[in-house]
Length: 171
Image (cartoon, rainbow, N blue to C red):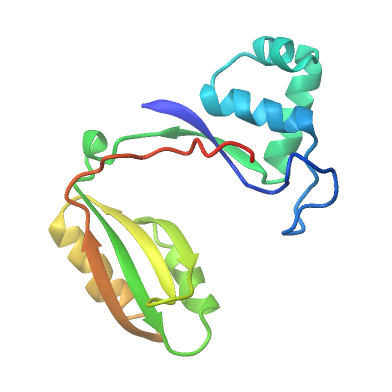
């Protein structure tokens, strides 16, 4: 288990205008702090301060502000197999009508780790992490397919996880 920072891509580091998605402005120092934490989510604030030219207290304040604004999270990223979750799948979902109620219901399910509304073959993609095949079947068949508005699903069962990273930087 290791710790990583998941940062939103909410600003272009080459300019200081409001980000394209209306999120908080991030200056070069905040972006540098995020990059330091993406390398090691447990890096001490004093070490980050040295790297970015701030005091430990200033780094602590900036990190807290980034967390409060929802720009990033500091989380432990695990390998699901090692903690008892032997089945993962991406489920493509087609919805009749408004996508929001279905997406909201999916986000409330503890087995659903990732929900994204898409353009293309599916309206919504949801990543599911389950204990075994029976658990996955129950989630898809009895819970997802039972949601009002769900027209169809297609499951893509993971055979082997080759890469899982959140190191896309702060571009």
